[in-house]
Length: 81
Image (tube, rainbow, N blue to C red):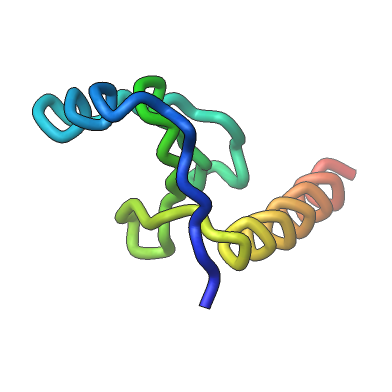
């Protein structure tokens, strides 16, 4: 099982996210519907799952997103020509 490395952020920022919710910013666009996000306050990284929900961005999930991204780019290039 992949472990998520803890971010070296002040605990007060995690408390802010717990109280008010995360402030996610898109860090990478995988496909038209799947993105990777990072919280501007605490640094938590998540990605969309195939069902549309957020899930933690583990090493395995990053590898899946990388393969999906390369496939999506190749598919778009073929559809243009």
